[in-house]
Amino acid sequence: MMILFQVTFTALTGYGLGVGLCTLSIAIAKLRLPDYAAMVTYLNLFLALVTVVLIAAAAAYAAAGDVAAARKLLARNLTDRERLHGPRDAQTMATRDRLAAACLAEGKIKDAISHYKRVLSDREKVLGRAHLDTIATAASLSAAYEAVGRMPAAMQLAERCCADSEQILGPDHADTLARRVNLAHLYYRVGRVGDAVALLHDTAVRCERVLPHGDPLTKTVRQSLANIGEG
Image (cartoon, rainbow, N blue to C red):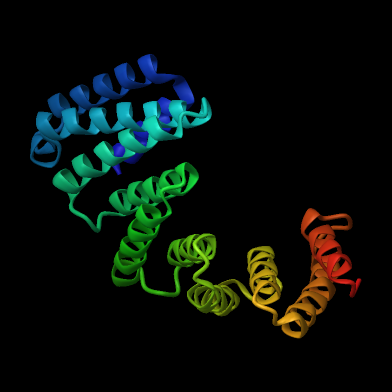
């Protein structure tokens, strides 16, 4: 939680001011709370600040389009987080997830798949399958599988994401509807045109019933049907 606070605060205030104020606030807390040192040591504080620096730098590189540099910083950040908090800490898993996304963006798809598989396994163990973060990772892994042509694996995960999202959020939630569109896209790619059309038609009806008029997702569904020739 302390690192999450620092990252958020630094993002809102700017790197220099954010790190300075975070350091000052924690130093004051160590002076005023007798047992605070047992919870946060100066080593942990130092490693936390390193994490803030790496995350901020990785975000800056990514924003500038230097995906390779962002990936290297995220890899270093992941190593530090694993050493400090363990591989199944929530922020460690989130960092590995971001590293996987950076690998995917750089074209290192095999590395991305390896990281996504690890995150998915860890999140299933820690959070359970029926958790939004777990579903998001499964969807990302499905996209990575699609990128290398592993369509059966991609569809299996996409179908799972739809089922889990429907269970947690309901069949008419925007996230569930978006996952149904992704699944229809996969059906179409492997030649299951009838299944794709049926799913898109049902999704279009749901979108028009629950989403605001002119919502981009509704337009996407209708455009997909038109492209297939079923609109």
